[in-house]
Length: 234
Image (cartoon, rainbow, N blue to C red; front, side, top):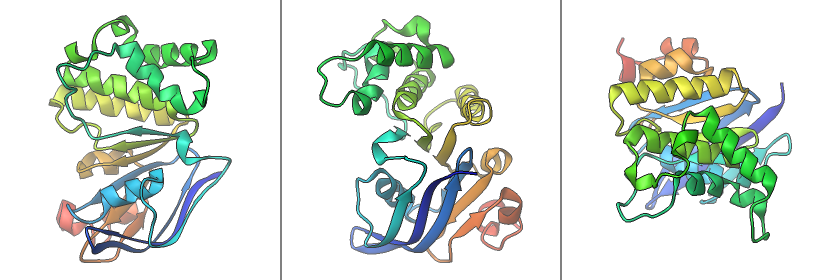
């Protein structure tokens, strides 16, 4: 199994307070890792470190198998797009290819095909010409996931992707993510507050805890750990 990413003894602070200390874990190709933790436990800080937005105070983040930070497809937390935002769905989706395009002024035919395939894969090809401000919450998340797929070569990083969605749209989004992992072989890192779904879908659980040691292991190991009792009961 190819190693995609490895963190060693990572330490980082937020607003002057250390929220991550001595964190180590390895993610392999095809893993589905769910990041759990209390508010303030360092989940957002870890994401910024993985994306290269924030430098850790100490420790290392090593990308494997030729992966670069610009090759990570990132889906941020759900927020309604501004009502005045004029872009079409296809324009938002293909913007995920900006890292591939580099200094070229126009998208290539291959990048246009990639965006089209991503929209077809997520069932929004018929919305390509629609303004993104006209979409429902679930459609917006599909669009943003398609954009992340255009950027992702091997790894998708999803930050609470079902926040703000109704139960049906959330279940639909989870199904899409499961398919991308199991059928398409995409490596997934997902921040989530849904412990039950995480235990059901993930191959690995990374739990950050502000008052205890972090945990990294299988869902079964997590369910039997003392840390899990804070989230799923005894």
